[in-house]
Length: 101
Image 1 (tube, rainbow, N blue to C red):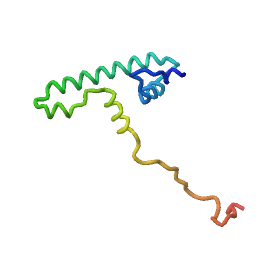
Image 2 (cartoon, rainbow, N blue to C red; image 1 turned 135 degrees about the vertical axis):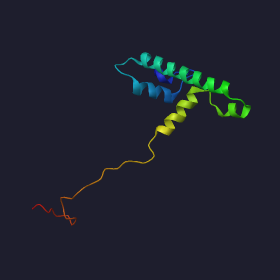
Image 3 (cartoon, rainbow, N blue to C red; image 1 turned 30 degrees about the horizontal axis):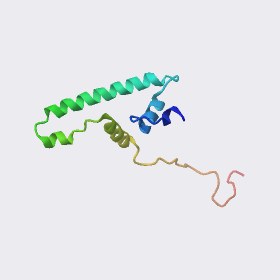
Image 4 (cartoon, helix red, strand yellow; image 1 turned 180 degrees about the horizontal axis):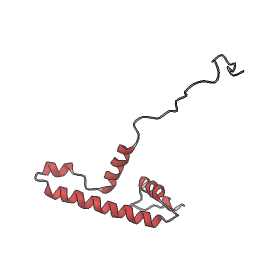
């Protein structure tokens, strides 16, 4: 069983992929530390906004879970359109014979 397949309750496949993408020089723990520090900052910011909310309806609209916020951010980050290469100019005339000779 690989390390990222261990049955731990906090294991998140998307988070593991994000850690591997940001990893530099094989130092996965270093990247994991900064990502969890970022999660803590997100949680603190959201909690402050939650405390400032006056009604229960406003509080219910504020997401406190940083994992859910990360998943929504990654969905928003995905490209909407697929980019295709554009062919400019042709070397043949289209009938199968080369126009260069």
